[in-house]
Image 1 (spheres, rainbow, N blue to C red):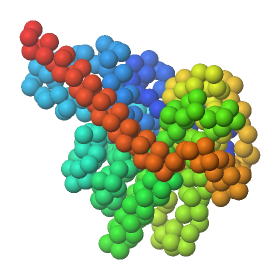
Image 2: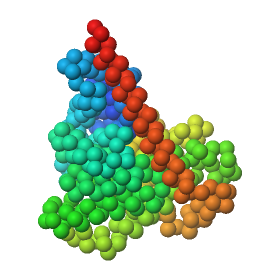
Image 3: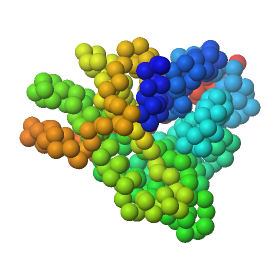
Length: 365
């Protein structure tokens, strides 16, 4: 049995944090699904900026759409939805076999809408309808405005991947928005199940602190925060509130580990996989991390998933040590979310500029 299949045995879904047309055309995604137990994938503006910039596979479609007068943003969504529909169809057997729990792909709304709740919700509904696939997540950031959009989008029956969550408080705010939407659907007599994942970013916690902490704290904040969030997640699922919702046919929003590639090249390339093996979760991995774990990852959690969660005293003590060394965890979490929004905005602008340049070449020709 492969190492990635063993993650499935403990209840963790393995997703790919990448999508390119070459991945689809060359058969790699098919290989990952069949041989490495990959059951879903995620995309974001940075991934598509690299995908379109690093391949000629999109040129013909860009040229055709540009020649027809299609605007730049619409061209991008045409390209991305074409790719993601193909991927969604490949994951449809998983989606059906898990009764709609797994087998999803994700497309993000424009990051420029991060502070516009009404337009975000409207755009999420439009993109989901345009995609025309049941196993299609629309990604919405867990910003203040995003939380409002998440509630309205889920209430409307659109599956949501909440992105750019860092702290436990940010996760709980996103979970509250999802829960309120499900409660509203039940009150309105609607289907109580709308799929969702809450994407908690892991490795970015450790970047700003590189070189500033004692060696025994190096690369441990992202893991400690994730363990704390997992504890909050399991406590929420075991609450009376969620037990009542389960009785009415609802299913919980799943916790997803994002940004799990190791950025410090002196550390293990599977650090954030081996330390976050846990049931009722998803780990979306960059391609090189997926291949590294398949090659030499170590399964440390048994099938009952005995992850040391945030309620564990040792983890609380570890987090307290960061505070003692001057790390304001709450402030850092807010900073990381703001930086994440800015990073996706920059990638979005780069992506559209890339497409606009190609479209301009067509017009000039």
